[in-house]
Length: 219
Length: 219
DNA sequence: ATAAATCAGATTGGATCCAATATTCAATAT
DNA sequence: ATATTGAATATTGGATCCAATCTGATTTAT
Image 1 (cartoon, each protein chain N blue to C red):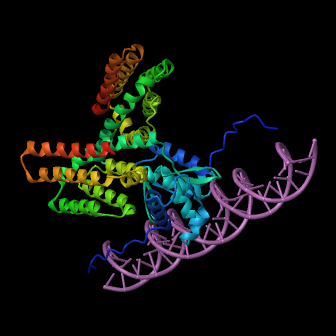
Image 2 (image 1 turned 180 degrees about the vertical axis):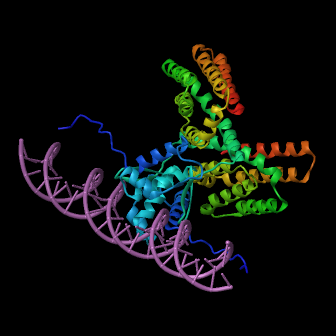
């Protein structure tokens, strides 16, 4: 006799919870650049000991989101304009490849989902939410791709410049332009999906790539 | 009174030591793919408790070198041929950019250093050392570049496929060809260094890029 | 009064201990 | 003989405690 698989959601470990929470807090800018992370304080916040907190911090450091110095603790990493630019260059190299790989794999469902995300982004009036909505759109766009490592690295790169993106978007007309570029990208993707002829598809893949690249280098 | 800054080599933390040691052991293939890492065993090996070991393992996981499952521990990650290929594609994207950035910054000293490393690689008869010598050559080649993030990611990518590289090199004539390609790369770099005319330099940068790309896609 | 020395918290890194879960293997039932 | 149950062991995740180091205010010497 076999039970229907119940999928008991495996309760995540404390260190994972702390890790995710800190990561989110950092990329959302709730923690200032250069602000130190006090283990004890965080531990109290999550009702745990400092052990899982330290594990979370060491993982954050491996992702480059914080830097630690012995006996001095961890601080949120600060990026120079020079470094920020480098990360955008990295994105400009990786993300077109991801979308090229994703376009042929996009289902109509996924496309309409992406359109929704896109619309939600353009419609939003809340500056605090812009970063999340932008990330959400891009993640959806890339989700069809099976380039797991490319996506992993792109995601990390996006994380690291998230607060710069947010700052950019808050600037006048940053949102408008980004919204329009998002539209262009998704139009290019959808066109590729409709037409089945090989060279036509290829042309639209290139179109999607180009739109994305333009979007990234403009910012 | 002020002491002359003694540069007391800050004794690294235990977790860092364990991390580096495990990382090295994994990429050098001393630990088999799929082999579990026993915290207690490792702790005894380094005369520490399991705390720094766990921190090291969590950092390794963040780098993708091991995977852990709750209460089941960490195992060295296995890569499918599909994933291995993806990582090589990633390298083929990143490393040409790195070398393009590095060539104009290479000093004669660095070039001769790279030549030595290259010769050492070609001369080596010890299959166990090939992976290290290869890595050493590439690291030296990239050291002049100031693209810190590109290098960081490239290094991680190389780490992840290190054992596949070693396996490839052990195959017949893999060494010979790699050695020759290394020569070509460094010749291209050196040529760019000697000539000062802008377009000539550019041509040699492209040459170095092309040599490296050929080297990476061949493997 | 100012600069060096010093002492008391604050903070991190690590060790030891305990609880939760997995694994192994012997005992038992069919 | 094979499958199932259950206890013993192994292994991980986390809590508490201790040592090393840093920071900042206070004291002391000139």
